[in-house]
Image (cartoon, rainbow, N blue to C red; front, side, top):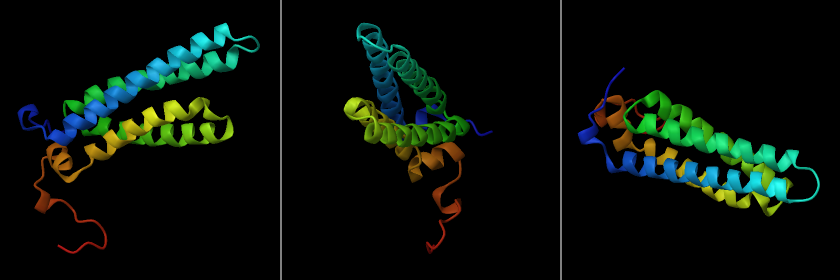
Length: 144
């Protein structure tokens, strides 16, 4: 496993971490608000509290995994990229099906997905892998 130099960290990696951290904190905040609202609203409390707890868990995962990826572990970066994509798709379906309740957490989750995109920019990829850009495998269909 390659250990990248923190002093040579590209600005895209720093911004990716900021997006992951902001998105994680935002999801935690919406989770707490949802859980509290579940106890205050008449009717079933299990669904809103359960969704709030899930949002809190995902937010904590964003923060913890983003912190590991920020120090240069490419495995956590790829895991977090997959998690951000799954959460955005899940919240998109929920916001279409359930209503506007999930629209605000969706916007926050999209910020985390944007951070994952920044973490895969060529400068970030070079820092994580340790290979110069000219040595990296070209994408299909792209000429050298």
